[in-house]
Amino acid sequence: MPVEPLAESAFIGALRGLSDRYWGTHPFHRRLHAGELDERGLRIWAANRWYYQCQLPQKDAAIISNCPLPEIRRQWLDRIVYHDGPNAGTGGIERWLRLCEAVGLERDEVLDERHVAPGVRFAVDAYVTFARTKPWWEAVASGLTEMFAGHLMQQRVADMLAHYPWIARADLDYFTNRIDKVSGEGKDTLDIVVRHCVTREQQDRAIAALSFKCDVLWSMLDAIERA
Image (cartoon, rainbow, N blue to C red; front, top):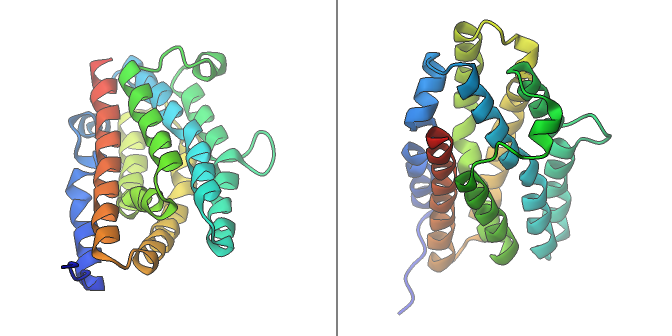
């Protein structure tokens, strides 16, 4: 017999219940926030996180390509423009490159990915493949880590300014610009998932997709820590 779908509140509760698995609790992030990384450690983090940032537009483009609903495609398109920028030299990816420069990396060595750890590349590529091969609503659900991100970004700005005096507030524009944006995106994404995941199977797959994304992020930091 078919299993009854979860009530909306229970479904949302199950998704939010994965917050403890978000990468904010990873030991590497704890050391980053505590000011325990040296300049080399910050450069390794920034260069490897770059690979994740630059793949996000391709992940979002994959979701759009799989989605038959014009209203969702129009809504999701803004994410690609946000990261790539409406013009060259703008957008979230450009702001991350400026952070890389602030921690002592040359732009060329970030762009050619020479510092990207194999584990980071594997995890990020798996995430993009997930978005390309799964139903659009399942890939959207994997992005619900946005629900957990806003507070962590606020804390990161404060802690990095407090502990790494060679980094200026302007160098952290990626985070300061993203705090309000990600809060809105998290709400919009949750609304999409709740509206379109209506069977118990879809709900369970959405929860599993978010769990998978948490594993991707955690695996990235494992690889960065070893690097």
